[in-house]
Length: 187
Image (cartoon, rainbow, N blue to C red; front, top):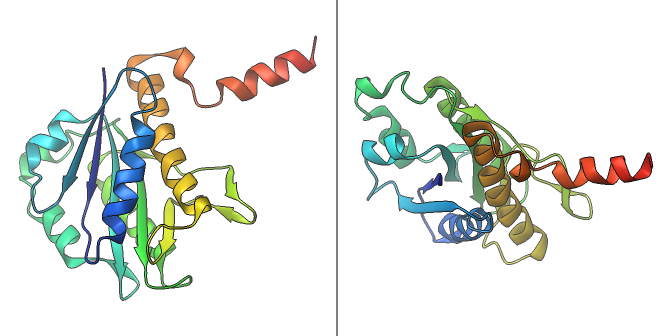
């Protein structure tokens, strides 16, 4: 069973809606179990349980919300170093494009890296001139199809990488279909 935690804080509900989409994407992989938690309800046992995490925060003044930062600041010191090798990715919403979502994603990655998570972004596009290289981002509510697709793809990719890296499930490798296409071209 691949254990995925979608952990988020949301001010207006936009980041929560992104979390819903990411959780739905994560569930697309057979054998994935997903916990969907707001930081107001989550605790250290959720971190212990998970093998992969999608971490999301609204962009507040170009950075992570204080509620998200406080949640991590208050984790027991015993958790330090216990997350090494787990898989992580990030997401953020802001009031407008250029509102600092990528800065927030980088700050969230920094938190995960400090805890030992192996982090990733998406290398493919989910819309014309739209990527989630640093994580899924949204301006306002995630109503655009390209934003929804980026969220779902990020969740699925998290399950795939976690299943591959933690459980050795080669059939779940996110690039398996791409590899198969290249093999077919060589025949």
